[in-house]
Image (tube, rainbow, N blue to C red; front, side):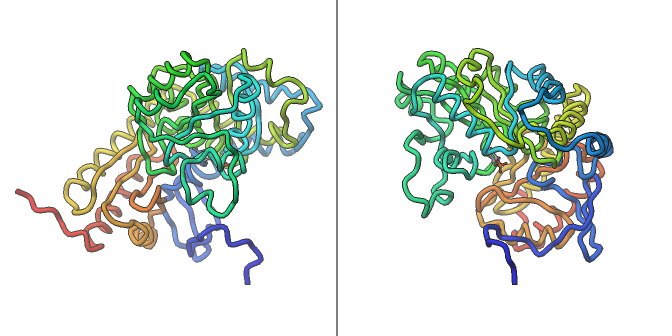
Length: 388
Ligand SMILES: *Cc1c(COP(=O)(O)O)cnc(C)c1O
């Protein structure tokens, strides 16, 4: 009998060890891992440089409180700031915590409380970030939600114009909605959100927990849109598997986050900083990011070819190595069959499967994954489209 709260639907696989894009379960079966811990192990599993950095730190000191100076935090913060429009960083341990910090900061700095978020968004599971999330299923049964949030349709400039006002503290959005189904924000919408925030003296918060840290071929996905957000939140890929999150913000906001305003016992812990420092050193390299973009295009193009041939396979969407494939039927059984065939992938809502390989994935591994997808889709009842 399990002694765990049954909060997760678990797959019937237990991973015993992993390296790069490969994971091996306890029966010795090898899989191609295109989940990567949900966009976490962006450098692949057990990456040598991250491992070495963490091991080295393990032998020096594991944890010190934020009562002490911490030059490792400064080093990681400098990397985040040098590759974004932000100027100051707060470290925490997860995506939800990074978003909590952003929500608190926006409310305190603007002295306003209304925050606009979007339908199908996902921002986390804490009381605050659950309320921010635009999905009913996440909130069911938890009673009254924090009243701060107003949810409106994504990519809808008109509704945003009608909803934003001088009472608005912030607009919070993902430039690609990951959990919500891999929906891309369109350029006009994202830029309008930025302009409207300026007009109404509201902060623009970009949730980059899934899209950040190189996933889309840029350090942060907002950089595809020529905007300069006030706050950026990251977590998942930041420590390549070591739990760590961060909120990056403009310097003017620092007046609202002074000593005693906010904090975290573990946030920015030396081990987490060692992992993040080694991870960013590799990922924020221009040549590395160019390869992510190129491999993403290569992968998408091959999926597009399959899409054209299979009934019920509707569309490929995404950017870089965050790719969704939408079907007109439920995808649970496809995901299971892919797994049985040695490819681990994830859903994003009931009709979309999501590919999140490590950014270090090779073209040969992409080819192998494409072959498995092709074989499984051709077999699982989705007959071939007629060629006219
Ligand atoms: C995963 C995710 C979160 C929550 O992160 P946790 O580390 O699970 O708290 C928040 N926002 C987005 C966009 C995410 O993908």
